[in-house]
Length: 367
Image 1: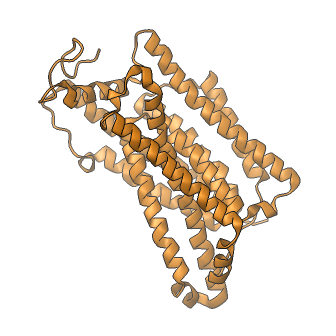
Image 2: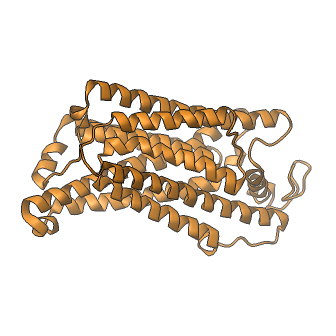
């Protein structure tokens, strides 16, 4: 057993808390600026980088993501994968506290959260406590295995499918989700989920590549010292791809937080990233060879329980919104309703200057 795996677990949990805080600070800043625009149609919203709260959230989000990478020095990717769902737990807390998004801790929301945590603990308990180091030659050999090819193919197909769905839906509504008809509300749901799922897919690939870089660095150092690390071409190639996937993850997350609730975006990201990271550990690094029969059963049961519980909670959030809509209320939290109102009032479909009355309400006025 790796004596320092618990250090990796602690670092990873701290990183998910930082990412959740950063995401909700970004979301909260945008909501508050949209509220000002709603109250004063002449108000000019500053760019995101000129919003101190948004900039703080962005920096926290990026630094937290980088800090999570350090956990891969101490623990296997498969062990850390279930911990990604802590992102969901901390997001629920920060979304409720910072942005007043609804969450019932003593109802089904709280039950689903408890089940997520139970599944995470089972996943960590059942995962193999091993770590990996590879030289260039060993990594190239690993990449020639069918399991690596399977992981690469599945991850690539999933990313392309999500991007295509997002592209076609945005084309359908001319880039304005509020233009989607009520009877096709499922398209808005798919669009919102696609942002989080894309961020999660890129994040899962990013974690896998980060683990690859660290494994190469340690393996090369053990084989040929510092010179082996510096003159490793494979290490440089993987690092360049790693940087690209991380930038894409940040971009997709930031864009998603502009158009959808943080609870939906971050929940989708947490589930998707957990699945991709798990597949990366089991297929890419072939951790399936290190499971015991009992450990495999506990790990799979815990992972399944956690994923189903996150999906169930997301459904509860959407269903709660639908019930409010049937009661004559908006289906989104207060600040989000104001964002949608402000966005609608500035939409080109309201006239050349985007400030003409719509549906019997003046621009910027909440229905």
